Image (tube, rainbow, N blue to C red):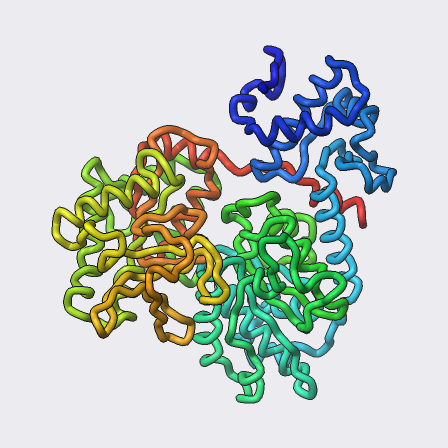
Length: 558
């Protein structure tokens, strides 16, 4: 059953995108009212849009005054001054309509972070200890990393944000050492986590590497954790339910929790995470507020940096890349499409727009990888060769999508006799795990390579944080997909020497400057682009505009 919209309906364009679930949601709640048919139709239109906008990543919907009155009369929504938890909907002071669940997530997150702000324990005479881990500066406030350390020591809750290569991991390792130096008699129990398995492994590698350069006692180094887990594993996921072992009634045992790639965390997960933290524990969030927001609802990291500037330090000095890539990322962030596009037309070795024969280039970039397989190089060498170059796509289906480019690359590689498509699990097939499997220690986003073992049997080998590899029979693996090309969303938390960013032929809502920024900042040395000037310009000029109430609600709780 469809919904009829008037020609003046503000929801008319979106109506074509409404799902059957959106419609069923609206009809279910409308049936609970005593409204007339016309009132029910108006209510159904509004609730259908609420369901739709929730799916788009918004946490709430802005109401007009007539819509607000309609909802309050319906009895389905509570008003700002009511604590009617039985109502499935809530309207806040700014006329935002929430599903009760998301209103509760916001309120619980705000309450916990406000409580953490009240438990700050400032420590005086830090400068001498800071000098041990950070360069002595005539103007300490100019040293962002040193300032981040001060914040993290003096506050229970700290956000350290910054673009790729600004030293977030290096800084947090020094902060951990600094805090342990302040708690020598009773070292802190520390947990490190990230939203995905791949991001966790990258953080683990960075932590292990950064520890070696610390100028401190071995006792302190030995009390710094090296193991990083996923947030789901940290909280003790209980699939298929949305609940966790650790929650507000069963708190995590850690004194300090560090979460990397926090921009990927949605409102529900962030709320559940902070609620499970002990009252006297510290929380440090690391992330790039300019990156893509979470796939699910909210723009939590960006909202928190805006709402809590006193708890936020932004690292601005870039160490990973300089020159063209840094300038290109800045132009995209500032939505200067003309400048950014001009940089792709300067035939240099760093940023380049590929022509119509781009498929040939994409295939050539994998020749070294297959040569290493053929010459029996070590797994670490083969994996490094594959990880040097990555194709990043905006979407999964259609021209220049993940499925399209994976298919076309496999076809050419097969014709060149580099792979054999007579079997699904051919030698050299790269795969990404798309389902978590704690028993096998494989998680969504993990990448493995299909290679023969010492007996000639086909296995899929995955790198481990300790530098070793783990092989699995293909039959044992959770669901996987070929990953010569991956979505930009899936690439978050990764870095490659070179990326090729492929955009679709037609403008889509997914194309935003945040998406493009995230893609190009995966590259350490070179960027290639497959797109048109029209699509590129429209992408740079579009931005993520999710509706959330988190910033306003923080202001109300002051």
